[in-house]
Amino acid sequence: MLKLAKLLHHKGFLITFVNTEYNHKRLLRSRGPNALDGFPGFRFETIPDGLPFPMPILLSKLNDTTSSNVPPVTRIVSDGCMSFTLDAAEKFGIPNILFWTPSACGLLSYMHCRHLVERGLTPLKDASDLTSGYLETAIDWIPGMKNMRLRDLPSFIRTTDENDIMVNFLIRETKRTPRASAVILNTFDPFEKDVLVALSSLLPRIYTIGPLLLLTDQIKNDILKSLGSNLWKEQPGCVEWLNTKEPNSVVFVNFGSITVMTPQQLVEFAWGLANSGKPFLWIIRPDLVVGDSAILPSEFVTETKDRGMLASWCAQEQILKHPSIAGFLTHSGWNSTLESVCGGVPMISWPFFAEQQTNCRYCCTEWGIGMEIDNNVKRNEVEKQVRELMEGDKGKAMKKKVKEWKTMAEEAAKSGGSSYQNLESLIADVLLTAGNK
Image 1: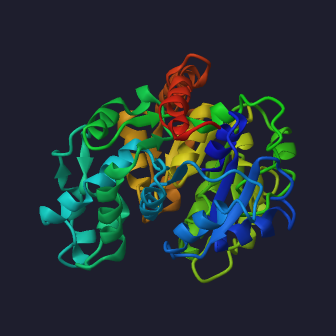
Image 2: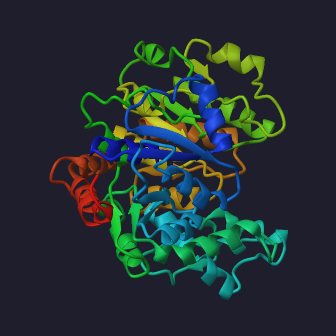
């Protein structure tokens, strides 16, 4: 969302970036108390966590010209899961564009959650369905999606609760999405062609403007360059360490900002990496392990001290572009997936929740750029997949394929490309219909 805001700011729009109070405070903690100050034409506001009702109040405040010399709000771009902004936009008579930040295949899966309920596929009858093979049930009736199983759909459907909060929330949000003036997706047309065709019959006009990171990279003399969205403070030294390694020699391991694991899973990943014999850069957040500190065996630390680096957080986009990175062990979050594609880096996927399962399936079967590790991770499997990724025939094929997708992503984002043109059309056809910038 922040990347999109930067792009629109670069195009001349005045931006008010509204965050939840919790995330706003986390940003200030990670980047410094004054990190969000002093950006001309770009200001920050907050709303209480979990409370949609203050949005009209905030709009009224922002539009009160007697207390502010800033022009009134004339359009809203909001997260797809925050459809309460639609009510506020309709009240004030302004356009509301919903930016669904997952993959297009993830969004299409969410759009069909209610059909899974109607067909009796979710909720599960009981917890035994998680291990009985039931999740292997073929899902062959969603237009635009093929070779799908129940377990490849968003993790929220793995519930036994008939009134599951997340399932009901997604059904509600996706039902409201067609009310939007338009829908934005952070993808590029060739990558999810069939899915985008299917979505176009369900939603208002869709603007595919991804990968956003390639579009923001084109901004010259970016006054917002220092404005980042990482909720964790980046640990220095990662790039310097990579500079000492051979090209295509290092496995990068990062499970994102939300994924958690058990102490045993942490140990299995550790020994799998150690036994592979390959250099690695592993990002281990302080809260990576459920209810405990992320403590690695001292034997592992001793054995890998000359070829492994551990860090609490890093600038992932920069890392994935580094020539020494050969592969990415990831949770298959959408931003991570796109960053890996843009870096030309194949993946080993360990999806955790939400639509990460869907992203993983597409990486492995549709795009040919990933391999999946079972949720019940074992060190032998980690070792085997790391070796295959780094030196096997499948790894070489994945590397070739991801380079092809990287080229297509760059073509889409460059001047005249599909994503570049879609951004221009979004501005001309939707954002400027509310008046002058």
